[in-house]
Image 1 (cartoon, rainbow, N blue to C red):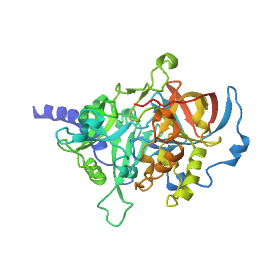
Image 2: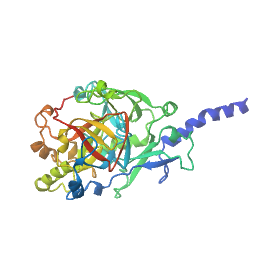
Image 3: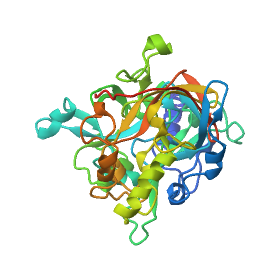
Image 4: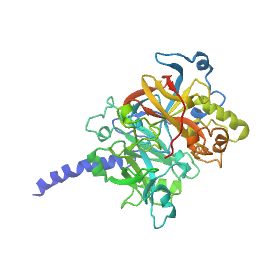
Length: 421
């Protein structure tokens, strides 16, 4: 009887053991995820150091000129994806545009658990429970680096049944090792499946929980938390690194639990679908003109000389473009980028997050937010003292491709009036 039982137990437990080893434990040092290749690169400080050379005079001379439907005003200069909300961005040359925004963008977020009995501030964001966190509270999230690894059919270990292939790749997350002593560059890492299958969710013990994001409370997939029975070391390490005293967890957007976007967004009758988002703040896409950033940087150079790098990446936009005059995007209502069209829904109101240096995770006491409020309080709907920088967009179609170097064609202009949450 034992001879029959042993093969049965092996067949039952082997897949579970394989997936647990593949995802719960970090890869060996230097090893890449099985059957995958890296998508995009981690930006370096010099990627953001555009001060003094941010305006490409070649494009200033060449644009605007008339395209097929409207004036072409510039080019996409760079694209950024933020797989985990408020953590380090990934720079890419090309990206898929989904109804929720760029693929991989803000599909994960860290969160902390609030208890109404012990937290008097819980009413500020709704009911007690899990609540997303960002650099607004934990600025050192900027020091957590994320890599995107996607299935690679050319990899020698690629098979359709490979766990990393079934989950559409993995995220490899690097975070500072607080026990590294004098070596401040040392880090630890862990892997998580990008889009776990139902089988993987069950085997890994992921659970569905409600997660508060502003005024929304969607169901979300809890990947790990410090208050589970046997939490992985990495979630405890990151909780300690950030200085979070509450139970701490990592969530993923759950299929079928996207948040509907209304306010300034076009409606289903106009789009053919209702705009949705995952863990972004408000709208699927954020676009920002580098000439607008250059204008701010020139003002900062004299007013706040201690901020020496460009502030471009502090705004955590998806699309940075070059070509037109500063703040030309303020009047855009509909544009074409490459082959795809977008509705420019509203301006982006700015909180204090741009005060955080994205290379060090250190927060300036007041700048550049204070300076922006002095001259960029330009939208009456945003309210008094609210600076605006960049624009929020909704894709006109549920799928598209965007590339660095794509032309930007203005199809419609007009005025904007921000609608508060």
